[in-house]
Amino acid sequence: MVSSADKWEFVFILPNISITDSVGNDNIAFCSPKDPRVEALIQLHSNIRHLVTGFTDQLNRKVTPSVLIRRNKPHNKYIRDSLIDFRNIYAVCCVISGWQNLLNRDDGQIMPSNVLYSDYFDIYPIVPSSMDDYVVIISPAARGLDTASEFTGQISPSIVSQVYNPHYDDALFKALSKEWMERHILRRYSDWKLTSLFRSLQVAYQALSMADSNFSTIYDYGTNLSLWVSAFETLAHPRNESVNLLSVLPLLDNPFLSKELTKKIYTMYFHKKIYRVNLVQKLYCQIYAARNSYIHGNPVKTKDITPWGKINRHPLYVFAPLIFKVALISRTDISYYLEDNDRFFNQRLIERALLRSKSKKPKSSRPEIGI
Image (cartoon, rainbow, N blue to C red; front, side, top):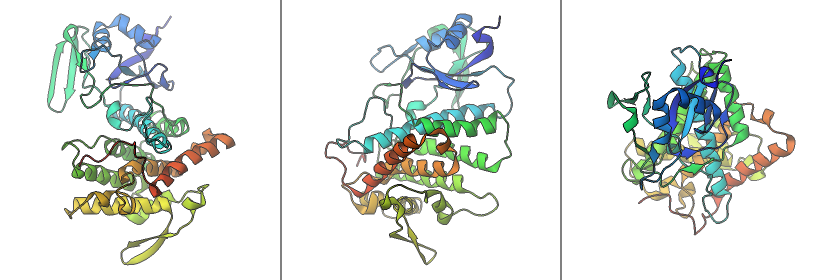
């Protein structure tokens, strides 16, 4: 009989989230250390046991991390890409859902199962060694072995506490997982659309991170907005031609249910021409304009990173993940995974959240710009 440990390989630990039920497919999955597949690996390898039981929060309280495992198959040059691409799918679907749910609440409060930043899905830079008594440090700053039995790990200091069973957009997750299967199981590595999609997701993961490199100055938020433009342009890139603002706009011209999103009542200027655009396209144009101000060193103020310069509204970076979802819907078979009623409900959720760009944020909502 072949055991679970013979079929699956331990890959990474994600200490900032804790999940109960596995998320994945027959080739790769995020799961709990109590998952039978992980338990079988723990029985065989002491260093895995030390890793999954060695985490605490900043106050030395024990926490249970999540684990990424994959089918035990021969490695190839795309193995790291396959792991990171799958992590990015899960993270993006969780964070998009988090912002969508936050914006759809009238009180502006974060629900416990919602995450707003990709930092929660950061991979811990210590993994099991092939020698059971050791763990390996994998970082651009250091490489080396340490004794597994002495391992103690912590969640990220920027994370106040773990998120348990983060909520994610299931339909989008299934649609993107289908693309993952096409690229990494069917090995369609030369397909440009798949390449641009997963390259875009890598940039989006960075854009979804907390803007705190400089302790959350306005310039940190500008960096994130700049990354968002890169994510959109990478997704829309035609490969053999240059990409610009006009290349992205067709991805944001979905058949919306709300007339407020369908009507092209807004204007934008590009290369001395005037274009009529819908609300989502206009929001992206404002992100694009803010990006230009930041990367060219122009003077910037808080109003430059809020919709229509209204500082009493949620900033543009809050809507960027939702606009990205609109673009991903244009690029995937998300409708295939939804019945008519579910499709209507899913569409209403994203549209209602996007329309929040036209209204004041709740007074009880915490400030998002640290200036």
